Amino acid sequence: MLPNVPEGAPVLTAAAMRAAEDRAIAAGSSVAALMECAGTGVAEWVHRLAAGSEVLILCGPGNNGGDGYVAARVLASRGVPVRVAALGEPKTAAAAQARAAWSGPVEAFPGGLADGDTAPILVDAVFGTGLTRAVDDAVADAIRLLAGRARLSIAVDLPSGAETDSGGDFGAGKLANFDGTLALGALKPAHVLQPAARHCGAVRVIDIGLGSLDAVLRTSPRPQIAAPGPESHKYTRGMVAVVGGPMHGASELAARAAYRAGAGYVLLLTGGLPHPPHAIVRQRWSPDALADDRIGAVVIGPGLGRDDRAREKLEAALASDRPLVIDGDALHLLDGRLRGRDAPTILTPHAGEFAALFGAGTGSKIMQAQDAARKSGAVVVVKGADTVIAAPGGRVQVAAPTSAWLSVAGTGDVLAGTIGALLAQHVPPFDAASAGIWLHGAAARMIDRCFLADELADALPEALERAR
Ligand SMILES: NC(=O)C1=CN([C@@H]2O[C@H](COP(=O)(O)OP(=O)(O)OC[C@H]3O[C@@H](n4cnc5c(N)ncnc54)[C@H](OP(=O)(O)O)[C@@H]3O)[C@@H](O)[C@H]2O)[C@@H](O)CC1
Ligand SMILES: [K+]
Image 1 (tube, rainbow, N blue to C red):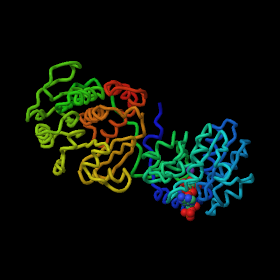
Image 2 (cartoon, rainbow, N blue to C red):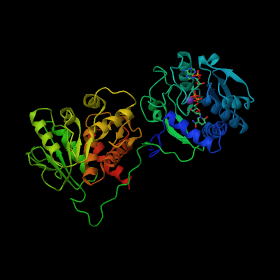
Image 3 (cartoon, rainbow, N blue to C red):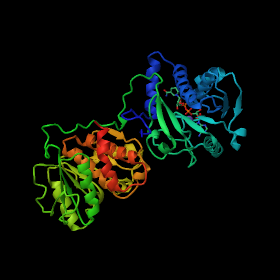
């Protein structure tokens, strides 16, 4: 099953898109030429998907609407039955030119369409990156109704009402659900950040001739993880120590996941009685338990508890020079103790843990994650339906949305163990976090039905095969 957004792709804010557009224009292009490319690209996709069915295109007053008029003209020239409905007259020169080149009738929108008089294929070209304020209820309601009634609904650039840079909803909870979104020139944050991302359906990028795009933010790429070679032994494949606590299941899951993600040796520091899987080496915790030089990464947090003993273990882990994955309970015990730590550190909070650690921030999830990474000096993974990975130097990625079945107890423990396995193999911390999230997401997508976290861990080897 493919991810819903392209992997390793640049993600541009509205301002960065405008800058790219300006560069293209300075190099000899024009808004009209870019719009022609965009509208033609949209028409090509719609033509393929419509298979002869009637298409209704909703056009807004800006250049998103202009793309819609171009698409309508191109589709009609290819014999596809097209209706156009517009929210007022075009306000930009390029959109007015595209409107003038459309020779068919233009219905009023919402107008009569507010009753749901749609076509089998609905194309939303009402608002794109230029939306700066809330959409009228009547407009948002009509788009939602029409998209819901269509057999196939496609958004041009963005679902109208999505806030480009934050992934927020200018439609006051009324964003329509689309089967697909055709991102023009590049992905925008709203294609990967919630709540907007879940309304996009499958996102595909249309090349509109902006040339190569340099972006700080990218979607996570598919990692390349080498299989063991003839020289490999259990320690070169990475030794992971999982520091456990009173909730044994969580640390067991992290340990199991570390093996399943390719670690050569997994040590579980709990002191519980031996039980399957016997490959996990179990030892009692002692203050010098992490002194073994062969330990390549320590995972601490899953099932750790929050009592004095847990604090003591966390102190020892922080004081060691081992690369660390800090998750779950350990995040609650941190209180700014990372300062001065030189060894690689990865924090994996979910939204609640993130807010408890760094406070209620402002700006998009991306900006907040970058800020937290800068302040803590750690790689910060803000988990959720739109997992963001940020490094202290500013590097940032958003993981492709994956299976919603991940929303179950234990999957965070599996992620911590997975990242630990990669970190123990000396993968740099940002890349270890990115690859771990990719493997975790790919395993979930492969199962894509109700599962236990144990089964997710057991699906990691197959995900690993897809990352060769
Ligand atoms: N960048 C590129 O390289 C290329 C970009 N292209 C395309 O351009 C799109 C961006 O176009 P854009 O900037 O004209 O804005 P757009 O999204 O059409 O909407 C703004 C319009 O809506 C209005 N308006 C705003 N809010 C409103 C509200 N709540 N309720 C009602 N009206 C509202 C606002 O008018 P205002 O009232 O604010 O003056 C304005 O008229 C982009 O997504 C892509 O599709 C391609 O054509 C070519 C290359
Ligand atoms: K749109």
